[in-house]
Image (cartoon, rainbow, N blue to C red; front, side):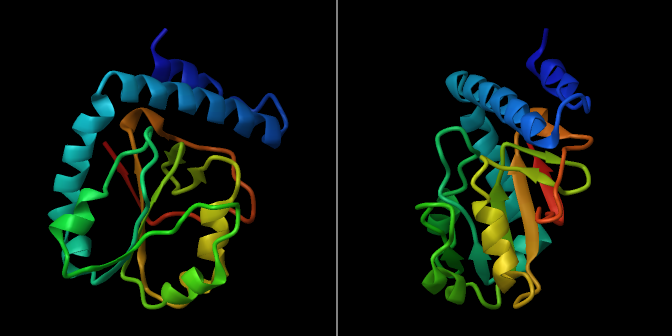
Amino acid sequence: MPLTKSFKTLMLPKKPLHKDKISLRLAAKAILESLFKSGELEKRKEIAIHKIINADFFKAAKKILTYKALKDEINLNALTKLFPDKDFLIPELTGNHPPEDFIKQCENLDLIMIPGLSFDKRGYRLGRGGGYYDKLLSNGITQRSQALILGIIPKELYLETLPNEPHDIKVDLVLAI
């Protein structure tokens, strides 16, 4: 059975929300591991970077919040070297709460790029379970800037719908590669 089909079948609402998210995370991590081992994530990195640098929202952005990619995430780290004139902010993921001094630096952002284990077509994100990005974005960053929030994900993990909770922050756009 293809990985994408098995992942989508987990979307059936049979279990409580918490258990659904646990099952979805396990399935997504297995797909990401497979994409990483096959070298597919590396190929998609090049495609993602090309699409991002040619997008009007990136061309116009001066201050960008991005992420330091884990081994099973689409790596955008090259953007910081390719565009030294842009101001990139990259959070250190230590614990489940973003440091206050980092949050203060996130004023007047133009673009926010975040990873996830999965995104859905409504803009909801399934993260790794710590709530780091939801906490970061709900700390007023989105109110203090007009930033476009971009989710980046392998196309196999871009789903019709994901379970979501009231504290979940939606992205404006998903780049599914």
